[in-house]
Image (cartoon, rainbow over the protein chains, first blue to last red):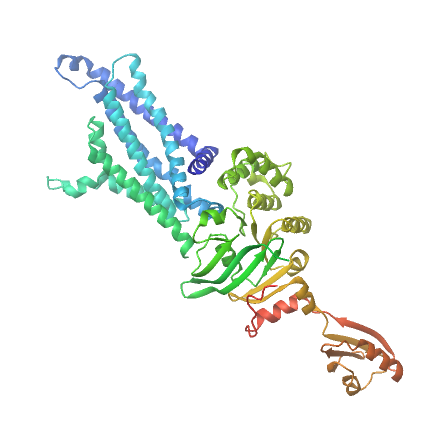
Length: 250
Length: 317
């Protein structure tokens, strides 16, 4: 049942030009960033060759690419998640799901997996770029895998937050702007503690960027994984509660 | 005859904040019945229907669909319900076929039976030729039919239709009414409307809801009786004395109208025959005599314009 809803969600996304436009624009921007990193590497290569234990292709090309990708996707996620529930509420199509023998959890999970499937497609296209380097050189595949896992978790967390914001309102644009605000806040929240030189541990822990950076370095900490999973579960849980509240009161 | 009860609603309440939208509504729906739900705007029709279909949680009371409690086991109960809200819940970007097959899957129709369910639903709603068209490009009438097809695709025991003929042209209205009557033979149907003739044309039971309360519940046959004449209008060339008319058996009152017409109110016995005999004997030169029928509209207005006094909720036929 979850997959039925997810499949419809994904299909509707691709029936609108939005999904195609997002894929095209993101791919274009990232391809540009990727090529400029490759160019950089080619400039530095002679000098790097002289240094013992110098950073390799994975560090110089892939890590910055994935870091930039995270910023681009932070801007794009609100656009993809804003309509998921708010538009159904506005078009009064939610009653189709409410009348069907489906639980609230199944509705939310279906919607969530639908968005996630879209982002996995996007991520697959993105992963092709670093993988293309395999033709000419050796890559640190472990580092690449850790980076991609980080990006998947990051996107999963973005989507959960976007879904919840979409569940709160009838207006897609309000869902988009509040998703964007919350994502950006979670991205930069560690700046607050940073000003006097020492990091506040709480804000540092809350920052999405921090947890992503360690994964980009190829470090797999269970704290980082737990952080993303907690965010996902929290916001999915809140979305389910919010949707149920539609039935309870007005 | 033992009727199979499909919907059993008991003491249903719904509050929005401090406003009480639905107050102590109880009724039953049996198989093969088409129940008309009447009421002015904001009377609580839609709220009641949303509660029966699980779109709205009741503040108090119980709802059982086909013997299954809606609040205890919502999934099982909901598989017995088809619902067309006021605005059909359609995805404009899908084709009719895609949409209906999504609905079939949502309602857990087994893979092997989906095609057949789809075909039957389309056939019944006259959607045979538009399967590949985008719903967004269809006319309002067709969109409404897609909405109905969605509600009946899993052959639920109960079909709830909220104002299914709003915004349709007269021919479409007739088609939808015919469809509703046809569906009523196998399913139990609850239909809300504020078009009064529609109720007389399609339903076999009527309920009028006013300010959240049921103020009238009867079968169409019972309604017909209420509609039946309790007054006569007679016209004479030689107008008789009102007193002599009041002497007639059964007559409870007489009033003079214009042009020599007189209205007679009566109880129990119809005074027509006695009146004709008297008219012939006394040369009143009676030239017109017709029974007056009340319309459903009059009953409706009587019930909804005054404060409900002699309410008869839950008086199931």
